[in-house]
Amino acid sequence: MRKILLLALWLASCMAFAQGYPAKPIRLVVPFPPGGSSDLVARTMSPKLGELLGQQVIVDYKGGAAGSIGAAEVANAPADGYTLLLVWDTHAMNHHVYKTQYDFQKSFEPITQLVQAPGMIAAKTGFGPSTVKELIDYARANPEKVTYGSTGSGSSNHVSAANFADVTGVKLMHVPYKGGGPMITDLLGGHVDIVFGTMPLFEQHVRSGKMKAIAVLSKNRVPQLPGVPTVAETVPGFEANTWFGLLAPAGTPKPVLARIHRDVVRALNDDKVREQFAARGFEVVGSAPEAFAAFLNEQSDANGRIVRKLGIKGE
Image 1: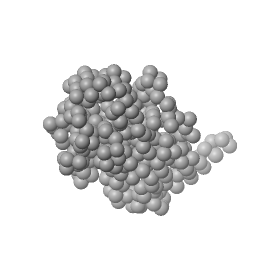
Image 2: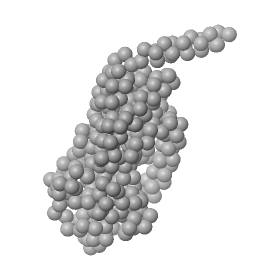
Image 3: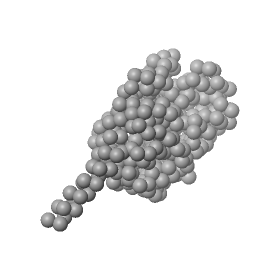
């Protein structure tokens, strides 16, 4: 009887807390420096989300270790709905290559998969090869001469590049960065030859002629850059898309999670927000928490197999 009473009191307190939520600004942790694709997703979504929640959503950058430092901070934050974590596909990779300070499955509450987008191989303007075949031929003739940037050792784009090298039988030189922003800056400055990353992050630079697109990593060509071929046209079956999602610390009250999920999905489906995402090459998802949890586990299992096969390690 005492346990039932305590449970009833706990549920009542959770409901009371949820009814007053949110009572202050919400911190959205982006576990990378500004200027990357995660930043782009956060800045596109957060103003409308703040409007719907009735409180400001403050984007807070906590880069390092391919996103695992920011993830650890959120895992240890109070489970009250006022600290959220924006993740991308590297989140389902990090625990395979780093000794993370959190449990991939137990430290977070999945809220939703936000958006997805095709990957791309982009190159500095002065780089000789302009097609996948030319890149492969050049890299085979010049082992470890071609440098490629990533958002960190063990990150998803590091793994995509390593997998590409393995499948095509070439040797590339890895140059890890702390996020997409620094990586793009060095590509624009001509300090690395190519990068594997999220197409929306590169599109405007490709259109302006500041970098060139070698290929997209999606199954089919994309409408934003219809003249850019897919890697699969040269390397059948090769595909590497990117995704972004939202998590909360484990133990966040269910009513609070439900409120966040409702308003995040509403924000994603706002006409203006959808148009902004679509214009940059993102596809809105807005999945249910249960579907996102299953998706995360599937991604983790697939990434684990690739990491073990290629022997990839973190910094």
